[in-house]
Image (cartoon, rainbow, N blue to C red):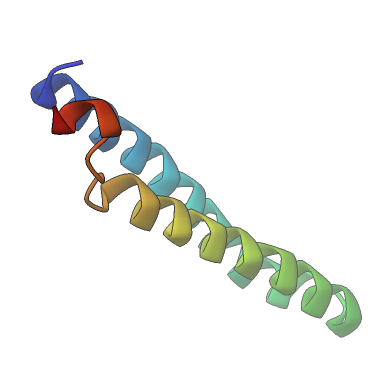
Length: 73
């Protein structure tokens, strides 16, 4: 796959993850206003874990790719 095609795929995946993080942030706010305190804490924990996983995914997606063994000929 060419570098340009790979960049387009990375951008599309990044946009999808950004949407998921945005939805999680909105859900985080909503749970505080619409759920009892015990449920809000649990919901916010799960939503926070989702945001952290999304950020980790972005980090892995955009980090430099190590050279593959067959490229070192």
